[in-house]
Length: 466
Image (tube, rainbow, N blue to C red; front, side, top):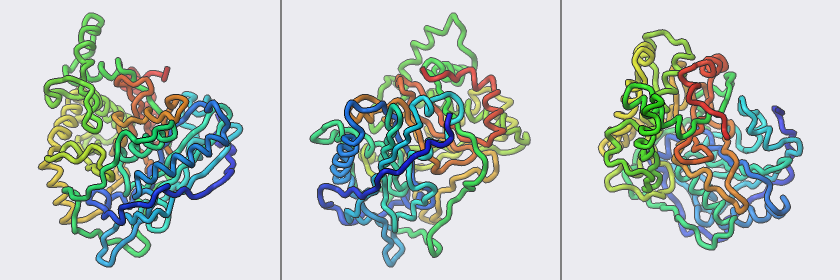
């Protein structure tokens, strides 16, 4: 497997919206501002080769991207700071970068081979290690299309102060939808700023802006672990009932659990559990297992406090709710703490129940208290693992990543770039087969990753991607 794809930049240009923006400026919210010290989001999709030439694909992508930007004018703008210190998106139609790259030695197999994610994947994105504050001078987004031996990779890079995961994938899905031939987009973004996140509080920055909150030089390993729907439901059963499934109960219990309220995406559910707050969810169960196994692999002191931090979408937690396609950041972080000894000595349900209770408790009042707390002490989002005992869960298996059909089929895989990665950074993706399967992109120190790979409790639930 090549560590480098011998990529060659063929062209680079600016893409402008095909219509002038009706929006002039939008002020960054309490949820946007902390992301100014985060690096640009880098996510993309691996596709088979289209049934037409790569040159034609580039033409189609440029045209559809221009149309897409007219629906998302903040992305084609720049950041500005007014004399009072408030940061705004200026929707000035300044455009975004579009790069065309060829990697003639790199194949789909190279990218999807088992083991660590190859370094060549990082070449599918631009704006490496670029902080979102740089959007004062740089474009707020970029798209790179890379031709492989037998496929293409479409990588999207977006300023994290402009979008959270929900808005990022809304933009990406719309880009794919228009490329596929839609004359009207199915879901329009909502740019209303009359929300609880709108604030007069000012976060003061040093000259030149903030610096990244984590070290980017530490050695890391990165792997994708796949969990089938059945494995996830087994974890959920163990977390809720404190025991493993037996052959006698397996089919009956899986049938009962299959209506897991797994997805609540933009107001749409795909389960029918009457009271989803009464049970530990599938994802909380998976997170608890990861928390236990990574803590064990780190060989921490028994009294060391461990932290599992989850980012949650606040759109549906507020009363009244935000529009499902509110554009921008509408997230808050939920930290859960436990001493290493207790986390490992007790069963899975103990840690899972703590995660569950914290997520359920994050209601309208909690969101508003979080906003008020930030206004009293404005601060940046603390990405990183300073104490060596933290895990940060980002992204979500609820995001419609595999809906990015550009006209010749669904993606083969989702991958991310180098951005915002450190020891303990985890990203959750839906499995390609859907139906509740999950891929975890796990980034750990090398010794910790080896320990996780040898953790029987964790690896019994991992399967190869079919």
